[in-house]
Length: 181
Image (cartoon, rainbow, N blue to C red):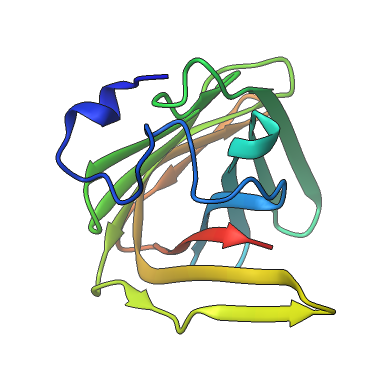
């Protein structure tokens, strides 16, 4: 199935972008993001997962407030035919500037948590060594990952209270991984 990604000159396997190099059900691609204020009172973690060989995309968020309250939201959807849209229910993930700036958004929803937070890198991403493991002849793990630290800016709203997120008072981390796990 052709997607808008197939228009770009970046193919690495003989297939359209709705496919991966293996039929292993364990093939996964994930992004993970966290932001916390420097006092340690507020902590947001969010992520998106794409499971090409299971035809699933999912997302989650958790926001902790001063060790007294925690808000969680999860969502999933069928991956195809919209593989080129990183949106799952009220969640969205947007690359603003590759390897420098991304935006995570959770629109208003029934669970009382919403946000729009930008990650702004303060260093280049660090590519980890590939992780590979074979057990009894079967590839159990074959994953590549990079991580990056930065600052966060935007807002988080929980149960009607809005928390301002700014570069001076918040730090952020993220990673992106793909492969068999």
